[in-house]
Amino acid sequence: MFVYADNAATTKLRKTALEAMLPWLEDSFGNASSMYAPARDAKRALEDARKTVAACLGARPDEIYFTSGGTESDNWALQCSVAEGQRLIISAIEHHAVLHTAEALAKAGRMVDILPVNAQGQVEPATLEKALSQGIAPALVSIMAANNEIGTVLDIPTLFTLTKRLSPTTRTHTDAVQAVGHIPLSLEEVDLLSLSAHKFGGPKGVGMLYIRKGVRLPPLLHGGGHERGKRSSTENIAGIVGLAAALLEAVNSRDSAAKQTDLMRNRLIDGILKIPYSFVNGDRENHLPGIASFIFECVEGETLVLGLDAVGICASSGSACSSGSLDPSHVLMAIGLPQEVAHGSLRLSIDETTTADQVDYLVEQVSRVVSQRRAMSPLWNEKTQTPTERFWPDGNPR
Ligand code: PLP
Figure: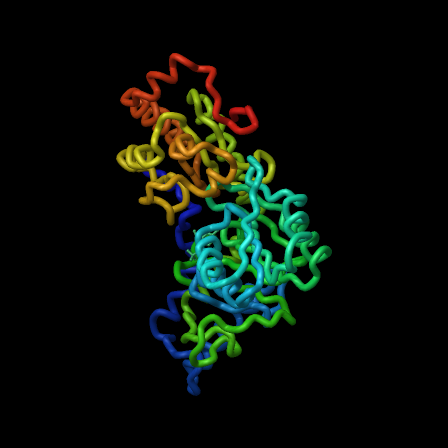
């Protein structure tokens, strides 16, 4: 059996997106900036896509700027909001697109505060309140809408309302790459929002930055003045049209898809937690429908992923971007897991097409591979003699 359980890394292109894209990859190849009929068709498709995306997000078309993906959108929001000597606040569980950009900004003379999260991966309002009440008013607060490794959905409305109340001049940005198309989102108190098409059934290499009307964000990319002078580079019409078609379908089917995915996620968690010394990471209540992150003590996540690949299962040991690195995930460290425990993580991310048979196969194979690896582990042999040992920060294995 083949099971794709890595939808947080990327999703399959939706048929509707592919069909919408095809004409723009074949005969309708005009450059939207040119002055002849095929170019005008391309320009019209671009503006129609902008209207669709705006309607899906509850925004205005002139607040939508297409980019090359989530990474560019995050870089744009951070790099162009925080000038030298200014202050930036982010959370400790941000994707590397935000975290590494913030680190680069810190090296270039910006003040960067990284807010800790609790064991569920939530930024507690009191933590943000304390940061806002100390030091100079930050130029930007950037907190993700949902985490890509543990699936926790953060309380952006509360956090950004607090930001605007305590520091009205501070701009807000949310990396909503994992959230858009999967859960309802509000733009209230959000000045900037990043999304990426390939996380909801659109093509790779295309994304968007929402810029609230009135927010003056200078361009990151200079050049021919595309996207009303804000983001230069010839528009990727096929990609943009595919993004809009995928987003429309994702938003229209969101509630039923989330219900079905969540049902299968519960089945998956119930099955996997029967494995001794296994835990689920993240927030039990506020989570994305499709992501489940597990810890198996005394097993290396990477070896699990390889063992599962051998039986047709695509999974991840953390975020796709950190796979291949020997460092434990910064997200798992931030929620309080000790380094040796964080190494034993497995992320399974399913969608509404995942069947009960596939979930049962996942459970069966994960159990088999975990037992197999533990049988070879000297750590495990020691552990079975001291079974009361617990690593979990709040003392509650789940
Ligand atoms: N932000 C989050 C939360 C992500 O999960 C990802 C991709 O995994 C990105 C940003 C980067 O998006 P892209 O792959 O479109 O550059």
